[in-house]
Image 1 (cartoon, rainbow, N blue to C red):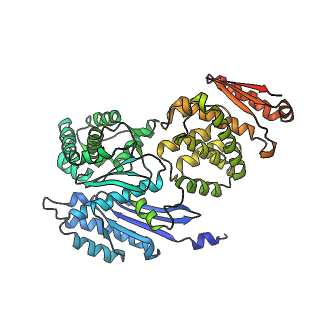
Image 2: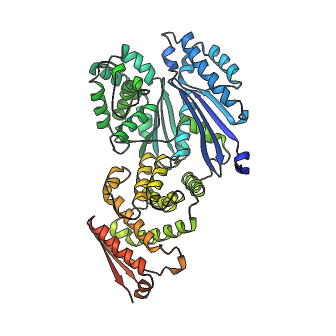
Length: 503
């Protein structure tokens, strides 16, 4: 097998996070301005559970943590030291005997460990979100760790306010769910305690304000997995949190928890994490929270990479996927051009905002044919599968759902369920954008820009009038027929496409 120069010259980067609940190791390499994950290793150490009332870390907890680091050390030995970041967070900030643990850990790893302050941890969490989620809005970022909870408000890469609160899913588990007992009273006490802690910083954050809320910790990921299992959009609401609480209260003990979609690995701290998240929702009057694809480790990683702030996040992802799957980029650009033309002509009648959804629509133009590399017959399914499972830095979970819906439905039968299941935008708005994409794809069927005429398209509510030169329509019988077939699809949705010839 031939090894390319890019593969041999691409250096590895590693980030190790000694968290209060889990120890994580992330190994990546940089390829053509994109980041490719090479390896992820996670061990549930639950270090915070080893702290006693005097904040002394037990010998047993330290031994478990050090054993885990001996596994990590084997993998790190081949990576340049300058490309490694190892950090410790809340539990080791609290532990009075942290120096003993850190000294032994550094000896095992052969690398210095940075003990992050609460504010530094919060800032890196925010940068991880900023590097992996594309949004023009001011955002509130929440991260519930094992022994601390971080709150950050920022815009772009600028952090407006960051704070770390001394409450986490492991420490709250011990305090408010003794011996794993699940009762309504235990939940109430945990939620009330969390609310009291949050109130100390509430005003500072509310004065700044935000437009969207993102979270990326294990608690939010676990809740998103439950929603995915239920085939629901991965958007977390307070009502959903109360539903999960009610289900958890049907079990007597944490050890008995069995919720569809919830892994056994996440069960031990789901109740305490849920209580903290409910308190955050109540105190900050949060309506919905979406899952972030990056947090602390991604923040540490991207800050190591050169020019990480200057490269457009989404474009980096799109370019990497386009190259990897040999997408016809010239054709994709042609479709984007036609999408822009149709969008502009329908913008006022259909009241279409030039927002994030339009950017997702443009991304679908770039990526709708990535499945062709595998085969033509089922390439839409392959494209959807790739986009469901690929690392999509710059796209939130709801962005991903909308992108997958567009790519799955850009031609052929229209499964309305895919449009309704996505939570990024309303179904009617999503359908209008999908129609624009489908028309652009049909018009570009010949894959030659110089063969497309100028045209006009107007709308009257759900009736579309597409005016094309009659001579061009005669010369392009296949496209003309596909436009007629498209009307059949649209009629089933309550829309109509009329082809009008212009002289």
